[in-house]
Length: 103
Image (cartoon, rainbow, N blue to C red; front, side, top):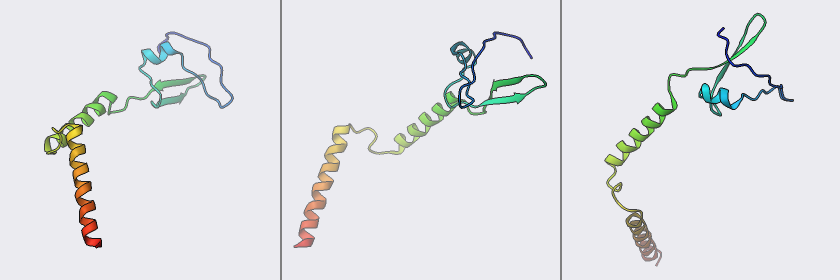
């Protein structure tokens, strides 16, 4: 195992250990990331797990998906105000139609 920075950490009541900020930054560890805990002869090794799908790739995929949806959506170029006018008009039409049916 490669030797590097070392720090002493206390194990909390729930057997949790807080990783120092400089370690988290160096290894790009964020809340929710997976860490592998490996048992050695006389040591416990904690290391980040490389997952095939990286955050940036996921975000890019989401952006591409929404762009595709917008491209096929006839309302995507409308302002929020225009959409609300359409919704309000549809609501009024529905109420008028319902009144006519109920009479």
